[in-house]
Length: 213
Image (cartoon, rainbow, N blue to C red; front, side, top):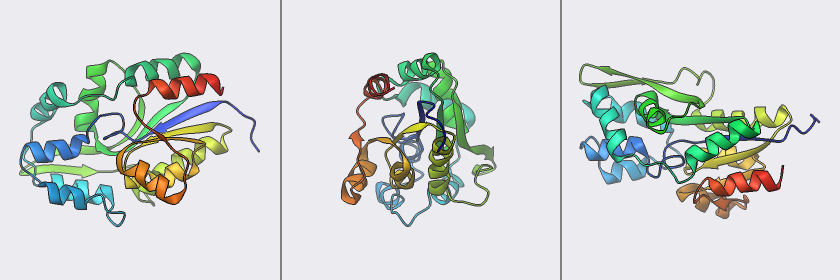
């Protein structure tokens, strides 16, 4: 077994770092999807990356519209920026693995003045919509990729805190040493006997790491 290097953190983005799923919010706000379509996308049988590609293919949005939307309407979960600064100061590796896309993640990080190692879909505005690719998903789906990021950290000798909110976070949660879950993920963890604390803010995670370092 690898020596204990302390804690590392892996997190989802939409609905986890943000209070609301940004992709869903964009699609609903501009009328490119309805509530039923969004709800169906959270089935365990649906791959998030496939839904995102399909849903945004006809979304006629510009980079400026998306950036403006993020600045005006997207809120971070309380304590997020402070948690990033805490991780940097304490030497806690932190990364994001997400089915979201760079076109709204980049302005979000700029808005909050932080830089984070992250894996996001690559979105490009094309005629009639947005084309999304996931270069980091080569031989696995997003759910398995998130789990692989947790597994790699553990294999390197870290204990891992995982943050998530959706069904595609379930595999990663099952491998983590500590889980903070919101929404659908919290319900799924409870149904499957996976220990998880409610994700209310990031300050609680910082306190946990300090006490259990």
